[in-house]
Image 1: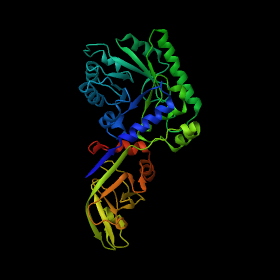
Image 2: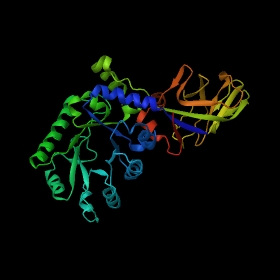
Image 3: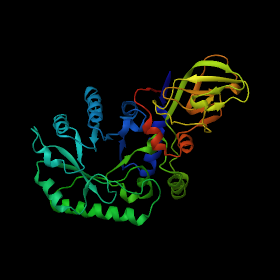
Image 4: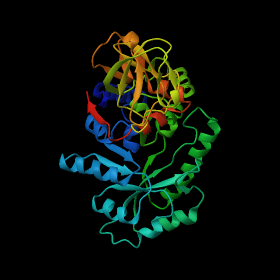
Length: 373
């Protein structure tokens, strides 16, 4: 048995800290794509819908699920889909009055759909990330979009240098390109909501916050990199938003036993017990999203004690050496989170694997039960 806990208090506190930096007038939208970065999209929505009006997803079916929650509870919050949209999904998005983004040239196919009302769309402009969006200088496509029966309610872009500070001149160039398109729309009488900045760019480039910011990883207690965190500490001093991790991951042991000296643990004789070893097995493996570690320095926490993961992380299980944890019966292993004076962070896991905190969070599988605590 394993489960994820989401701290409502930490989530709300993180939002307060971020808003304090932005100022009272700044509107905030929340990114809950990829199952809210592994936290559970519905769990996050239920925690903070009262503090945020707009929620962004990339999957239309996440949008449908969240919009249903808003309608059933008679809430005026809105969800905006900023990912790829197929023809069949366009019809339902329009019927349910969900706003969505034009990220490529699929809009040419939407004209073939039987749509009952004007789609409310956000024009995604590629100003230099080179991923989704209509190129900022492709005025032929922009004019074509304006000729369709769309209601342009927003104009957005995404900065390239979100992971580190990056060359500031490139971000400034992106913002300049964005403003060029914005002026072009204004000259045609279109005045959409402006949104460009995600978590770290909104801190590094306050001028990019505009009408609404799209806060993602910072809300969940993480920075895109240690560099971005240190730079923002220097920029904001005592006003620095010291966000805290929201997520904990725990599991119950299902098998505790003694392995004699000289026996191995794991596939391919991965770990040799050099002494009599008390082990515990938990039903967590790489199928659940735990990194596929092999003979590394990874560990879990039992009663505040670091217990090494021994052998290899398997598909549905792993084994820990709990010799020093002073337990004889079923116990709880903390894989992410605090136990006593010790803590394992997502950044720890990312460092062990040589990947990013995004990789760890996004890998957490939806089948794991999530509890709001």
